[in-house]
Image 1 (tube, helix red, strand yellow):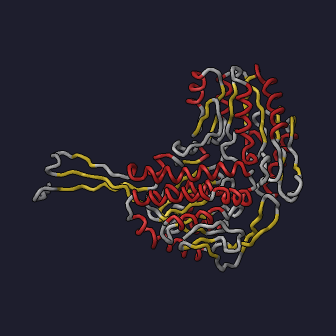
Image 2 (cartoon, helix red, strand yellow; image 1 turned 90 degrees about the vertical axis):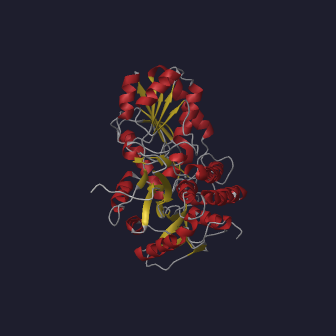
Image 3 (cartoon, one colour; image 1 turned 30 degrees about the horizontal axis):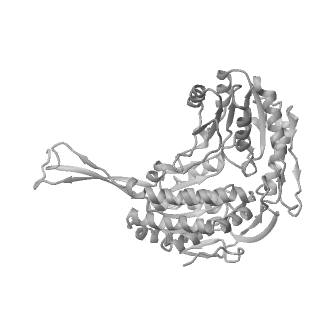
Length: 499
């Protein structure tokens, strides 16, 4: 099969047994293109019966894939990476239409996704080998060895802010380990995982090993509760993650990986290089319209450079943050995912005003020429709030930066950790010893020193506290998609007992 990117969604948004398809269901949801704010398709919502069909198809296909050597599976995944690179521009355009992010960001996501398949395809043979273990009496009498075996079917539920990349992060290690996958994307961004399915088929992944369902709560619950689903991986909100964890233990107890929300902090000490701190604060707040779970909306700035930093960040934002059609090359801020989410962001800006916040720039809806129907927002920078303000405490998931002054290292560490989240944090200082010292005390799964929002496939990604558990990317993620089996071997002619 040769992969060709579709021109529209007419072929369906489900993927079963190696083909894009559709289903008959009593209810549908609107598929909205964020860039223009218009409904572009109607998609059936999967019922429990439809989910059952897709899971059973994956379960039937998995043994063929799982019994291949890790080396042979890796070769297929390298072909997937090659196809993604070959069709990167087409996929990036689809990602813009699905999510609303600027095309330059979408290209980065697609390039990283190809690297993810290469990484897991490349390490599978070495990582998935078992161990030979010596036992009392020595190998002439007995020994043990271990095997890393796939779970079987893994149910994955993805997020809308990085539709293609989130899917890849979950699917690549699952497939490398020999599992089959049933994937449910967010109904806000349903198309990208279907494109991935066609790429997987073109690369040689057997029919049925990767299937895509669509829908809302009913579909997600049915996937988590299904008895043939042996593991669940979820990216989304804390409330939804709590529900996923409960649902995943109703029919059979299964491990769950949760990548949930965040309310991250960027701490900027007064010995920092201000231009570099400004650059990282921009990356920490305004990528993907601020719809990034690691975003450091709480920017703590030591009072010695507060005025200089504030002036510089406002100037930089005014000069660089062009809001517009995300398909245009010079756009740096695209459309929010939908109208409801934009209203949520505007609500936080209004609450900040009510609690004494000063809007230093932005904070309003805008209507770029040619795409007036989309949910566009001029990124906000706000000062004057205290730590108990609603906007400071809760995850906004939008392009809203909050500048919070501090005086001492001990003070800012206590304030930074005073949150139920723990996904990411950042420290800026000209003193690397202080950078390491503070990083060690911050309660977060990822800490950036003199940088922010770096992401590499070989580095673990995941949260502390309510931001989730388990990790994505990295060697440990591949191991986490397998079960370890211990096997004892008696090589003697006879076996004795103690009775």
